[in-house]
Length: 329
Image (cartoon, rainbow, N blue to C red; front, top):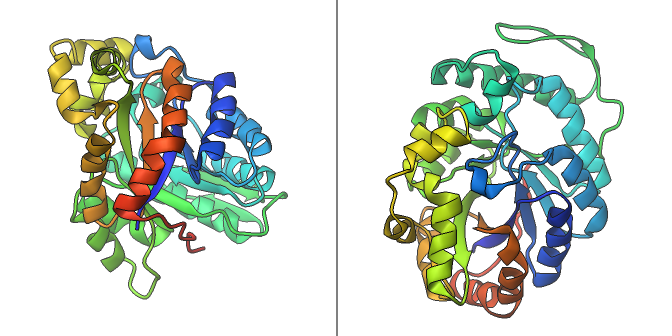
């Protein structure tokens, strides 16, 4: 069983698209928490938390999620906990806090320097401890290696404890974070991650595994490939490379020799539902419970959402089934 989600992209348009995604039958909408786009051609990077508040009021049943927030450099973890609790209240318990170790693209803007991966993982682990303590209630004081908290308390909290999902990429991050979160996030359908995640949570219920898949839907396949190449050619670099690049100019330089055919080989382009099914199958085979689709190109969202309602979602339901498991809390 696999639930299909939708990825939100722009500011004011994003709210309208979230409403349309809910009407089309999507149950989950995820939003990146970026300060900058990957490429200038993408053209948008609004403040995600303000947008989520607006989307919470504009929708009724759509689950919302950050995919993902970095609670270490740009944001202090105590502030992230407050923001998450507020969005959960505004959405009436429809919010999941997705967290990760961050990208240089977004974190370097506060000019603290970009740290090594092992240090970022240490910081994320400590941040998770602080956020979990605040979600548990009461006053929290903390003096750790990377963060200090002085008598912090969340005064407005939802009835349901905010679920936490954490992005992982390998054994090290799975071991470090599985015991501190409710669900797993991964950008690639690595079949070893899910079993390792569950094994690191002895006695806990099997949790959700949430992935993401970019597509470029268009009846004109050539236009779909051109748009994907213009806006998403950075995708071919892989996470280890992309996490280190400091800005759109660096992503443009790193992807300057990526050809349209290279992009089309990695991203389903055109109006073939079968290509989307084929691209989602590795996630299903790897035990993922949710996959959020990223429709590339702001001007193409409504066309995609119309196709999702009439063709894409029914075909995906037939291929994989659909379910809406609750996050453990």
